[in-house]
Amino acid sequence: MRLGIMGGTFDPIHLGHLATAEAVRENFSLDEILFIPAARPPHKLARHITDERQRLAMTILATRSNKFFRVSDMELRRTGLSYTLDTMNELHATFGQSTELFFIIGADSLADLQKWHAARELVDKCHFIATTRQGVDINFSAVEKFFGAIANEHIHRTSTPGLEISSTDIREKVRLGRSIKYLVPEAVEDYIAREGLYL
Ligand code: ATP
Ligand code: MG
Image 1 (cartoon, rainbow, N blue to C red):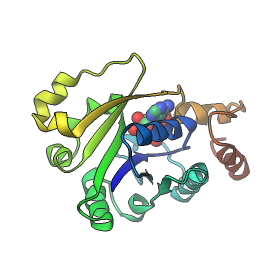
Image 2 (cartoon, helix red, strand yellow):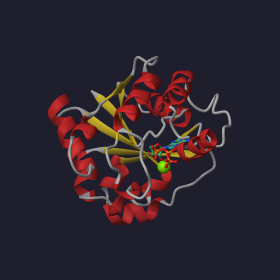
Image 3 (cartoon, rainbow, N blue to C red):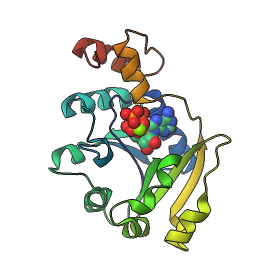
Image 4 (cartoon, rainbow, N blue to C red):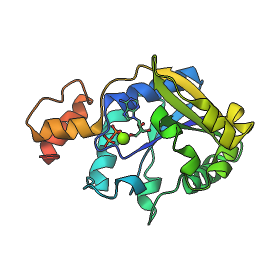
């Protein structure tokens, strides 16, 4: 089994996340993509983050129409900061050690990978797929230098449609009373309105 993992705050989940996950699924022949909303991302402690229950609900609504997409609340159930290494160990325990794990990350995050908790152990145990937009290049030599030969086997790059959408932009639009139609799935748009999020 080849399992793709899309982690994020998903505050809210948007079509950029979904289109990327679908493109990666095809490009790497993955069996499923598991969306894992993060509890408390260490780099986002500063800003207010929407209730976990609501971020989970939007992620479920957004992924419902794709039979290859699943959602896990494993990071929300865990107390304390979420480390990818803990998530990966839990996934291996759940899906079996022979399941190959592919973490999907934005190209911008690839440069930070070496600073992640237990970075070398992580790259040893699972795959990373860095997604770039057409025409945007990644400086891979620094990554290779840090991780060594394993980088070529376990760190992959692929280009995806790269929609210019961010959750930050969507929250701002809602606050300003502007339309977010065609940026998030309709069910998510309705949910945001119903729950009065981002006002
Ligand atoms: P925020 O603006 O709050 O930072 P975001 O839109 O970047 O939100 P995250 O939940 O932080 O969304 O992102 C989760 C993952 O999705 C990250 O790996 C990020 O690089 C990737 N991602 C975010 N937006 C896009 C996009 N438009 N296209 C492709 N990947 C994206
Ligand atoms: Mg982000």
